[in-house]
Image (cartoon, rainbow, N blue to C red):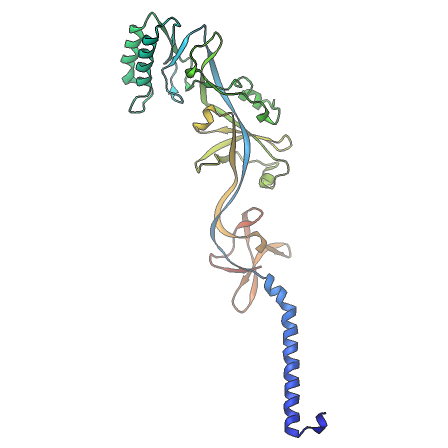
Length: 340
């Protein structure tokens, strides 16, 4: 066929064949490298925060003293629920069941007005003392004063599990997991019409002796770095709040599936709740943040591939903290372009 073509047309056909062959070769090369190009990702190293946390069930162990009624009485709290009360302070009145309904109503209103003082001070504050003394004299034949045997946080709410969830038992490892199987309905003594002999009047809680026993999931990657070398303290928070509490780790036993924390501060939610979910912050560190997948090794040295415009280079780095997705590193500058 080419023999029958004129010389000019023959040359043009040959050029077209050569160009088509070249395009096919380029297309073939592109098809070979395209999958690698599509898999190659770019990341700009920037400052950030690495946080590894878990939401876990916990039981609250409080050092609390129960005060029980010596007989059949009406109970009238003087101290406010959740208030901190010094030792020997007046916290409640036991009122005779023989009190007339109208007299009881007047007495209850008087004490409630003092307890719910507008300035939000506790009923045992100095400015209320004369009024409480006056009430004691006015109703001297109908009531008796109850005072705190030790300093602590006052509460009229009891769940009936106080003698099962004792800090000393937790320290001794006497834990039968899951703890949440032991449940009882909380009862508020201030709402009862009459206390019977032996009924719990109120509790005094030592806010310096509060433990959280957290049930750990088995084989959890979040705390894998703690096994064999747990830190002295850790941060915890309530799931619905951003307020963090620092706690000392007193026991860390992954094989027993529990961790015991001693709280250094006292959240009001810890006063009457027995079972609660908490956020445990395993890792929290700020620094230069990159994807963990960007880390690679060459001759045993950990580093990243840095894009330097016309070429790429391996740059050694030091990993300060890491989780399954991200890592905090040093060794490169913020804004460095990383390829992986």
